[in-house]
Amino acid sequence: MSYDIALYRKGLKNKKRAYYNYDGNITYNVCAMLEVAFGEEHLKKWNNKRCNKFFKDLEKGYLDMIKNPKKYKKYDSPNGWGTYETTLSTIKELYENIQKYAEIDGFENVFLEFI
Image (cartoon, rainbow, N blue to C red; front, side):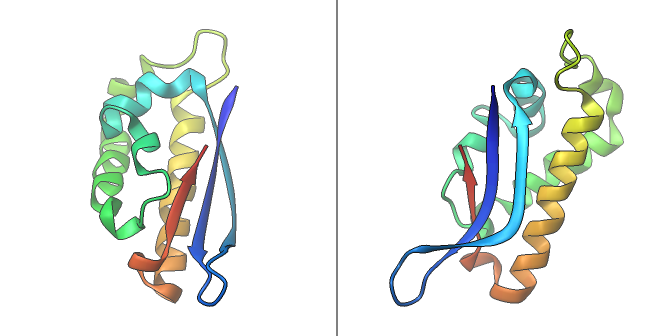
């Protein structure tokens, strides 16, 4: 099982979501690793939140993952479905896409969907 990750902005007129060109996916097997990097409830706590509300915390955890690989590699899934490398790659992609779309629409208008 896994989580799907998306970024969206709320529509201006019809209030429907307008999704950005980004799709992420992360296995449940790395939840312990994510909690070390981002705290209890990891990325789930930011579901449907504006990126300006959590971006600094995301950045802090992401940078810690880069600086301290040994701290995170011990949470690699024994079955190989979810490793430090794949998790870091997913977080990097999320981080870079938030920055990309925030430059266009502003951090306060970019939302995270984590389901």
